[in-house]
Structure formats: structure tokens, C-alpha cells
Image 1 (cartoon, rainbow, N blue to C red):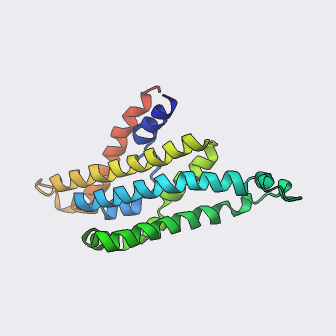
Image 2: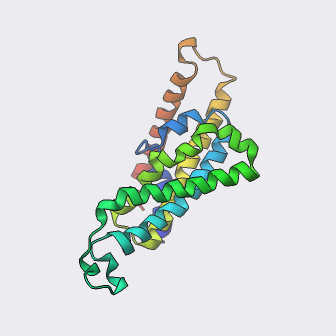
Image 3: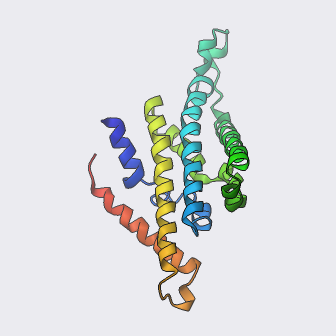
Length: 204
């Protein structure tokens, strides 16, 4: 039950995009079409699901003070490699993004083309790195880190698909000339963030 509560909290109450505003660049750029937004959302879910638990494993068994005691090598039990946290986290993310990019290029070329430069840019998407850093800061164990990775990715995907659907509807609406394009998109993003804030009163 605790894990279910954590998942619901990360999808709705503390949505990583609409509460922390992480990953806004690709959120705004790739939400013009529902198909593109869905593809990018699935890619973010996949990368988050793999990288957050993997980074937890690296942090716990290699980087933390005394994490290398399991090797049994004299002197390693006092070794502290936590200064390598950022480099290791980013390397893991870049590796997973490369796998996703090669997979989409081979099996889903249309989606690969529509995502364009924003697919490799997932490697520097602050929502992805932010997920691993929040996991580290909150001190999750492995089950909680895994659920946090999946649910934060689902929350990000939900937000971008919802915005893409709204933007599709807006094409048939009468919008003042000065608000067309990015102006109306920013207003809709703000309204969505306010809508998700209404979940903040829920006690889980």
C-alpha cells in the first residue's frame, strides 16, 4: 500500500513536470502532436524506469562511504566515492538514451524522425537527472526507488500527452492573434499546473 501511495503521489500530487517544472524544454517543443508526445512520454517512462533503480544500485554499492566493503579488499571499506555521483548518474542516463535512440531508429523510424533532436536531448533532460537526484536526496530503498522511477515517468508522460491533446483542440478555437503559439501554450501549462496542485490536499 505504501508503494501504491508513492506512485499516486508522484503522478498527481508531486508531478515532476508540473510541480517541479523539470523537462520543460521538450515538454513545450514536442507537445504539438499527440502521437509525438505519446512516443516521447513512453521513452521518458522507459528511461526513468531503468535509470533510477540503476543509479540507486550504483550509489549504494559503489559510491557511498563504505559502500565497497562488500569487496573484502583492505582499505576499501572506508572509501568514499560520492563525489562521482553526478558523473555516474549522467553516464547511466546517456547510455540508456542511446539504447532507446537506436531502438526507435531501427523499429520506429517515423517516430524517430518526428522526435528529431529532442530524442537524444533526453540525455540532458533535467526531469531524468532530477528523478535520480530526488531519489538520492529522499533516501529511498530499492523498491521505493523503482516505483518512484516508474511513477515520475508516468506523471511526466501524462502531462505532455494532456497538453498535446489540449493544443490539438485549440487549433479549432478562436484565439487572439497575440496569444497564438507559445503564448497560449504557456497559459495552458500554468492552468494545468494549477489543476494538478488541487491534488495537493489529498492525504496518502
